[in-house]
Image (cartoon, rainbow, N blue to C red; front, side):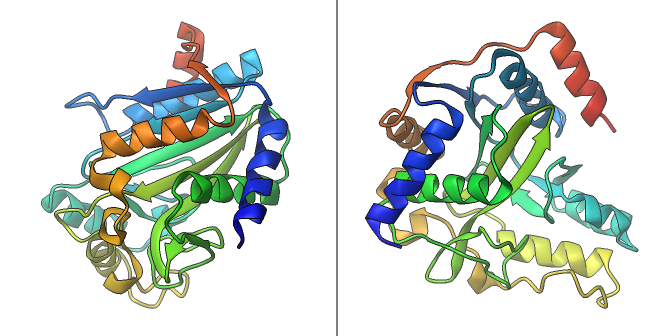
Length: 269
């Protein structure tokens, strides 16, 4: 896809959400917090977006956690798979977004764009994908499914067939949320091998929908020479500066007590 076409998608995203300003927030991980903590905070932010009718770009991280999709709760040996992950130091959390198992660690950035407008599903996915391609240029990132990656989807971001990010979408209370799990730096434990081992323990091997995850299908930005990806902190700064080319960034409006409690009730197991 040409630079001109990419820019066109970025321009389409701005008026769909807001041509003027964008709330921007980075949630700092609190050591010892429950695996749902960052997701609950994001859930509360969605209520803020609905209340104030302003879009938000939210960034957060979570160490040593596997986010499971709703479909995986029905795996025949789910507890065995979760016990295996726990034994190698990974917590498990069921996320509210669609998709399948995704590993998180300190080298993964979770990026969520929220808008109070009724954006069509394809428009929201494509706009977010192309915005990220724009922010991460000059890397030659393409959009399309990587079948042998974990959580494969039509809006995978890949470099030469190696997945570096996946997108998911959710709609709640009039707010459209598009999220990306972006692999920034390598992990101490192979992300592909981790998810492959989870499925080996949690399935019979006959579930057709479970992806056959290959190590060669998953990578990270730093391994492809992205200078801004030398650390998550540096990439956050890079993304913030990139967003500022299209929006006036402002601090997030904090959720009210009722909004926080509502988010807690919805996501607590």
